[in-house]
Amino acid sequence: MQYRRCGRSGLRLPAVSLGLWHNFGGVDVLENSRQIIRLAFDRGITHFDLANNYGPPPGTAEENFGRILQKDLHTHRDELIISTKAGYDMWAGPYGNGGSRKYLIASLDQSLKRMGLEYVDIFYHHRPDPETPLEESMMALAHMVQQGKALYIGLSNYKPDEASDAIHLLRQMGTSCLIHQPKYSLFERWVEGELLDLLDGEGVGCIPFSPLAQGLLTSKYLKGIPGNSRAARASGHLQKTDITKAKLTQVRQLAELAEKRGQTLAQMALAWVLKDPRVTSVLVGASRPEQVADSLKCLNSPAFTSEELNAIEAILQ
Ligand code: NDP
Image (tube, rainbow, N blue to C red; front, side, top):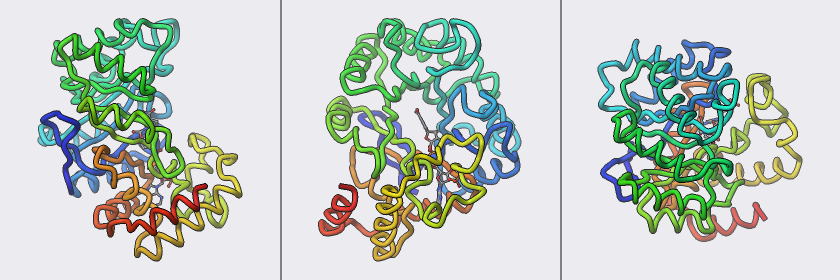
């Protein structure tokens, strides 16, 4: 495993981290979830990313992760970076969503209970909340660090101007923003404008989520929708309508290029995100242990030539 420094902090994260959004909930097979985590940790993936609402049902990914931790990893707590988040719908009524101090602090307490932890390493505000003053949300995050319930703070899905305001407010409150978690892949390029420059300038790390576009940036959908794939599952967030003919044409061409480079499309897509030194880690998902093993081979990728990078841009146009 390679470990990369997260912004200007003292923390290094594995170049590949594992997210528990899908395949770790109450609807999933716990033993499979456990085998994915065991393989990941054995291969040097020290960072596991969760959120209050991961499941389904919401909360069950944290409960299952807590069970797996207890069974397999309880003696390794100091070798792990565990993150969670709050921001989206979690419980009924006016205090179960958004960015209020009431919601964020109650949610972290619930997450700690579900995972059986005394603290998380990183707590994220999962999304900006235009209805709550940013000062209130940031003060709640800074308070978690002062209480010792979170070691570091992160932001997710914040646009550059929102991120800039939040980073400065946190700094005024004596808490650095460690990391930003945006969606970024060959198919989703918005971070390349201002956001990556901002994070670099402020010394904040970046951990892109869905770097495989939820599995679209693999060869699996080239011959139809496999029954065990995310697009086929009722609980999957990848919609069949996202798998368009135009996307598949691009995927086919990208897969051919990956083959010429001697790797799978998944490995090439991850290596492509990781080639930017401003990216700290790629946050992948997996439905089977073998997928983690396959994806990790992105770390042995040949460097991209300028011809290959141009060919990728031509395919994506
Ligand atoms: P990916 O884009 O990595 O998609 C993961 C899916 O791709 C897997 O479930 C699997 O699909 C397929 N896959 C993975 N590896 C391979 C492989 N080597 N070969 C073939 N197929 C493969 O990421 P996710 O969308 O899962 O997101 C990753 C994490 O990012 C989440 O778990 C979560 O922690 C975080 N996230 C954060 C969000 C935020 O708002 N902050 C939003 C979304 C995600 P299949 O199931 O079909 O086998």
